[in-house]
Length: 100
Picture 1 (cartoon, rainbow, N blue to C red):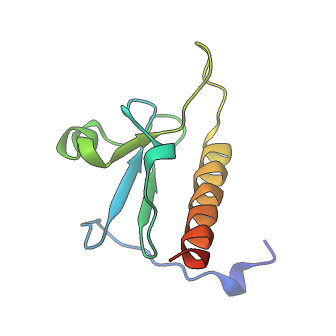
Picture 2 (cartoon, rainbow, N blue to C red; picture 1 turned 60 degrees about the horizontal axis):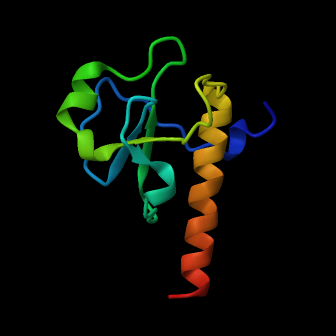
């Protein structure tokens, strides 16, 4: 990848949220369209094969969000879901900076 030099990568043995965080899962009742993004938010996605740990989802149901899907077939893979959420968040943040 040609952007490694611009990446601020942090590795942690475990994760304890200290700021606002949102868990993205197909099991969520909340829609990402209702999320009020703020600078510094942590967006958490699980592995494509199994998603986030069930105990995280059960412990933080109010923090769980999903991308709305039309029809019975889910066709979003992980990279597409991350892209959609990140760009939706960037759009939201840009609009809120222009209209404080």
